[in-house]
View 1 (spheres, helix red, strand yellow):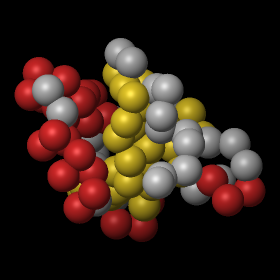
View 2 (tube, one colour; view 1 turned 180 degrees about the vertical axis):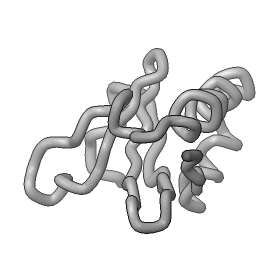
View 3 (cartoon, helix red, strand yellow; view 1 turned 30 degrees about the horizontal axis):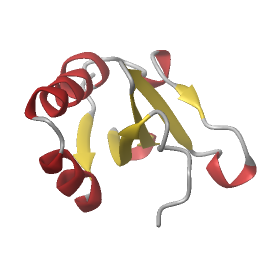
View 4 (cartoon, helix red, strand yellow; view 1 turned 120 degrees about the vertical axis):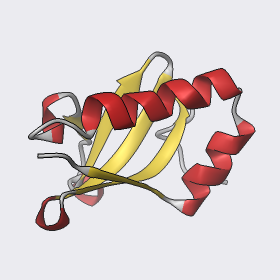
Length: 92
């Protein structure tokens, strides 16, 4: 069972601003490691807290991917990609 990966518009813009090598590594991780899994929760960890209970995080090097897993449509919606030092802070 393959999952569909969707990128939020903010994530798409952010990936274009990153170093191309880092962006390729993040996208390869999503499409080659996460999407083919039967259960994408195998490689990720749930975010803690009541407002984040539906979000999952994935690590690829120093970068973090925050995603919402939609089981009913087999879709992984990536809502944030950022460096590990910044990803959990509020957006400016």
